[in-house]
Length: 110
Image (cartoon, rainbow, N blue to C red; front, side):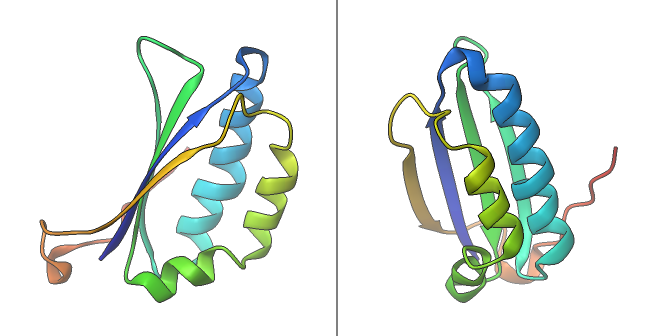
């Protein structure tokens, strides 16, 4: 599995709008339209609500690369322009546990 952990620092006035966009376009779009996206978590820092963390898991690096070319990601990028307080920090990793064969696509709902 190919995983990413992304830290996003937002301007405080855009936190709610960013959360709405990341959930609607990025998280739901990825889980609903990309067979290679196995998990997409959106987390908000307890101590600093303007920090958002994304944890994404893809079947492989090719699935992640395809993710970046989808229409829902283009909409997401357009929707969040000007919201960041600085560059995002991205950690790319190879999953060690659970084993690849044990991953299941997460279910999500309203």
